[in-house]
Length: 58
Image 1 (cartoon, rainbow, N blue to C red):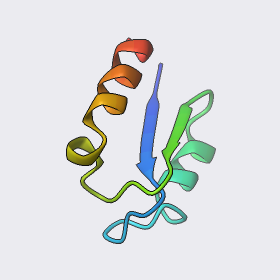
Image 2: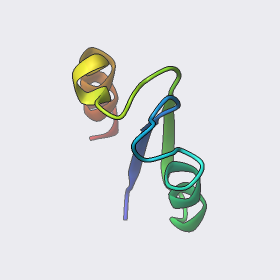
Image 3: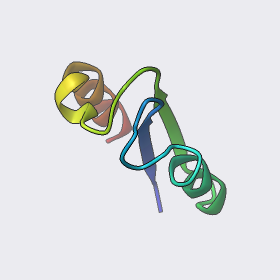
Image 4: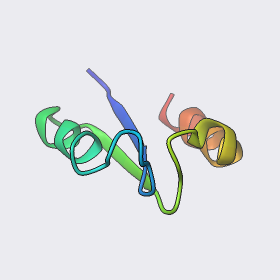
């Protein structure tokens, strides 16, 4: 199943090492994108980049 994982490198709520990286390892062929410097609310702070990545994935 196509899977897109997006995570901010500066997420203090859900650390990238514990979630984003692990999820990408566990889901075969997942597309994993890290937004450098992005916080937990990257949907707000990086909305243009997020929207483009979602469109590209779909």
